[in-house]
Length: 266
Image (cartoon, rainbow, N blue to C red):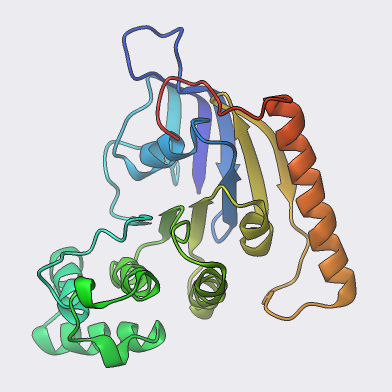
């Protein structure tokens, strides 16, 4: 579904200073891919290219075989900072998204879908709350509902749980997996950027490891879903994968553990 061919990206005219360098990657329809790596290695830059918010300076980026030429009709994004309209309630944030992204819905359908999505993310009782009245976890639930309201085939997530405590993060990981798997009539593709190795193993079918603007490794995660309750053997596999990822990232960044130097943001 997504294909990157020798992608390069620079934030300046100096092509020797690259945020991304020779990125080649294929992501299948319905696959959940996590991208990990230290700060500054190009994770968010890559996600911006996939979203059509920036364009490669080299190579080709294809979605369903067609060149990416801007924000796609098949793509929804969830950011770490929620990006909700502060003057709108949870319900109105979702209703606004439905109105402007799914043309042809009448007001009754917009109302029904908005309330159904709030219920799915456990926010039906907070429908009339504004973002400032919600906790970080509540705001992120609304952000996920709003992304689902767009009804897109590709879901991009940029460290959506990075600012949350471990308990809330775990709850939202379970919620996201449930929502991603729940629609049996379609296969949504998810690309999830995270600094957290454990989160990547918990969420992904495949993990892409980046450093210095390049893909340095990739690891398949052979764990069955759902992953809320796992056998002892699966728990052992998860621990082994976390250790393997830690060793890959430590060996590539060197003993200093410094952030990657790739000329742009993470």
